[in-house]
Length: 268
Image (tube, rainbow, N blue to C red; front, side):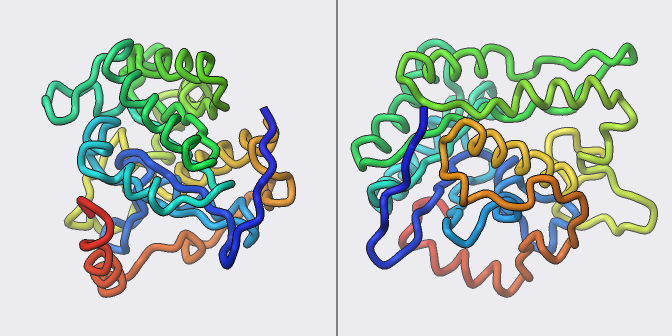
């Protein structure tokens, strides 16, 4: 399905991102951890603005119930995009987070689709990457279970484009194997300090290197499917990036931006 962007009055078109901790933008105190959304602008031109609304520990249910989806929908303009993906926290038994793949998860996810369309926006379903859990034979565990299957089913039923980062991640981790896949995740390298907010040996959250590759795949997938205009893409084959390009916020800026959103962005 091909979407044409609609000219905006007074601002660029936007890609709003809804998701959990894998997509969250991190401040310097989390170095070298990074969410894929903060790397996404590396592959998009100034013609479009990325608005990262992802929140740590969010499920499709909690993100919506805490008013975050509603905030996005109220802020959206015709022609904007809503790129959203959940499952990592929906699987948890916490009643504030948990959904069942083929019932309550589908109901929650459908609200994102219908909400974006009611605002004359373009919903795009993201299948999140699988965590790094590889046995000694190189087999990757399917931690996310049926959630990617259910999300794809919804996409087919509602005719929504899909970015299959989940399937791509399985190929990556299996091809790389147990050791070579570590550099994509939060494994500290020699000489790197352990920050108070991160764990060494974290198989769920990515380093900047992993976030960049996820963002590259997401941008390429949307461009190749014609989901976003071709002139929005850039540097898809670029191989070297400076850490300063990742947009980590210093602690003071991070606190200021967080404080400024408290009254306007529920649960920030």
